[in-house]
Amino acid sequence: MVIVAYSAAIAIGLPAFLIHPFGPITKNIAVIACLLYLTIMERR
Image (cartoon, rainbow, N blue to C red; front, side, top):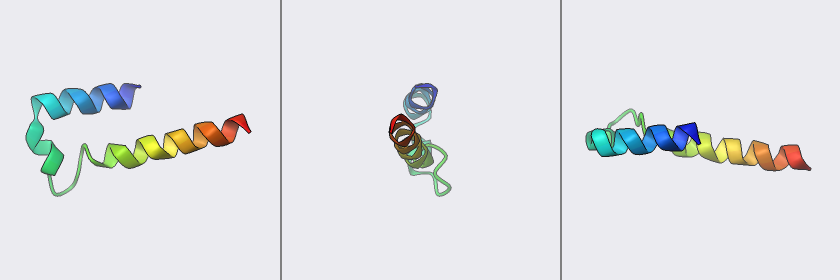
């Protein structure tokens, strides 16, 4: 939830970071996917 809020705030405040070459915001998509995967696997 913190990652989503952080990403949304930065995307609104600094939209240039969405297309930044090093992907400071877009990398969070992979982080969220990994966290979801770990959450699903932990429940099994």
